[in-house]
Amino acid sequence: MTRAQIIGTGSYAPEKVMTNADMAKLVDTTDEWIVDRTGIKERRVAAEGEVTSDMAVKAAVRALEMANTRADELDMIIVGTISPDMPMPACAAFVAHKLGAKKAFAFDVSAACAGSLFGMSIASQYIQTGAVKRALVIGVELLTRIIDWEDRNTCVLFGDAAGAMVLGPSADPNRGILSTHLHTEGALTDILCIKGGGSKYPMNAEALKQKLHKVSMNGREVFKFAVRSLTDAVNEALVHNQITADEVTHLIAHQANLRIIDAVIGRLKIAREKAWLNIEKYGNTSSASLPTTLDEANRAGRLKPNDTIAMMAIGAGMSWGSALVRW
Ligand code: UT7
Image (cartoon, rainbow, N blue to C red; front, side, top):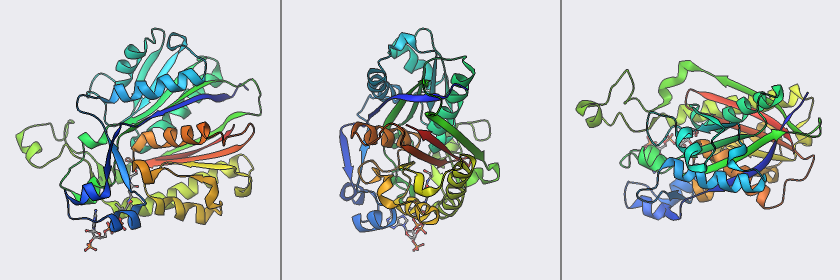
């Protein structure tokens, strides 16, 4: 079987930094509370006029460069996002046009913080069948425009960023994406959502007044579910590939909360130094966080051929999963 391999990574974060001290000027919070409860020290905020596809393109250009691939060689573009340029058409269409990816079909995946993992899984299947030779998978979010800046439960958590991966067929059958396992629990749609703007609560003056167009979250419920389901998903990947936690070289995790990552690696008995962390600098960047973290580890020269990388992500839906990659 031809496996898909990640042959290029790229990331981008806007220049503007917002520290916890800046947040404390907006809502009743403190640097101490945010660091203790989440591990976040600062986050990035997109510039005025900058849109989601602009950020995606910046990360994509870097990934394409590393993959030695021209945009017009791409067959497929998948963008994981819940904060696209517009509700319609897909953010991926804007990205394809801006990149000049004339040949590629392009669409968005809505799996919130798990969007880039879901996208990677889809692209991997297309490459395995031979239907696609070059795929671009992006996780991008401009969350600072859809969070409620008066809600301290959510606004301190999120930031803007983009991460990208170029996938192609692996020349070595033992290397590449070994497995992906994806899950959804639709009974929990209400613990993390944006209620307004769809068919249930169309956008009107009343919906706007109630801030239904903003992210709402029951953090405690999301936290508990995340620890359980991410632990199970990574275990599922290990069992499926007959690999022990000790054999994992790196853990690339969605950066939602440092305490979630710590709780999961504690249960899995994966050493802390194997987990790549950047939540301190960027906060929770939803679907961007996994590819951004991967790119940082990659560009630091820490991912060696044949290293075993476990990935995990979870987001609204609830949607979650894991992947195991032999680099
Ligand atoms: O990306 C995937 C989706 N998102 C997540 O994975 C997030 C998952 N959840 C979490 O990360 C955590 O639940 C939070 C960081 C959101 C909250 O941490 P927590 O330890 O679960 O706190 P809590 O919600 O239980 O709140 C504890 C207290 C509350 O006060 P009372 O009711 O105990 O008096 C909150 O009102 O902390 C209060 N609080 C704050 N205090 C200062 C909530 N937000 C803040 C804040 N600053 N920003």
